[in-house]
Image 1 (cartoon, rainbow, N blue to C red):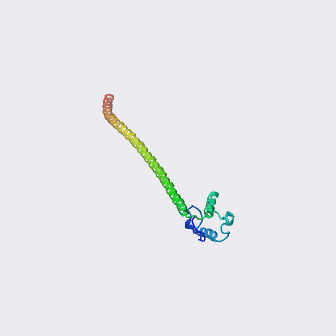
Image 2 (image 1 turned 90 degrees about the vertical axis):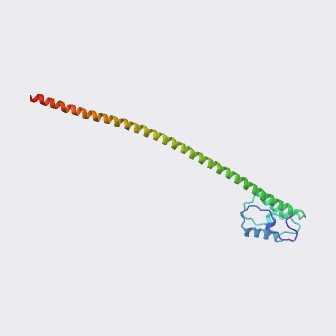
Image 3 (image 1 turned 45 degrees about the vertical axis):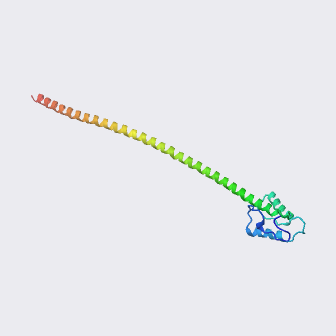
Length: 176
């Protein structure tokens, strides 16, 4: 057991359990255990304690009462401390595993984000290439149209000069 007969039960002698008890509620619970509410040698029954709202499961409550009801023995201190160490060790292992899983998910999200950015970059590069090609074709068409426009403009000048000459010839023919 964690304590010897005649000793008051201290909260620090029990393994660490995750509860929603406040420190004052824990002190009150242990003060109830330390009161002589039962005869010496008589097992503590769960009904001696007031009902408190906890997150203990029924099996955890039974385990607590079995710890209080265990007879004191010389090697019992190591049993409880092993349980506390094992419990702490198990929590550390679970936390470590949880952290690994969280890191794995974080790496996966980072990888996905990088892949999305790479895909977006490739789409932008492709769109940029297409826009450059369109610009190149448009500039080529513009050049062709400018040359055609220049040719038509010079042809217009030539035709206007010819027309002007024809009007002069016609005007001289009519006047004669």
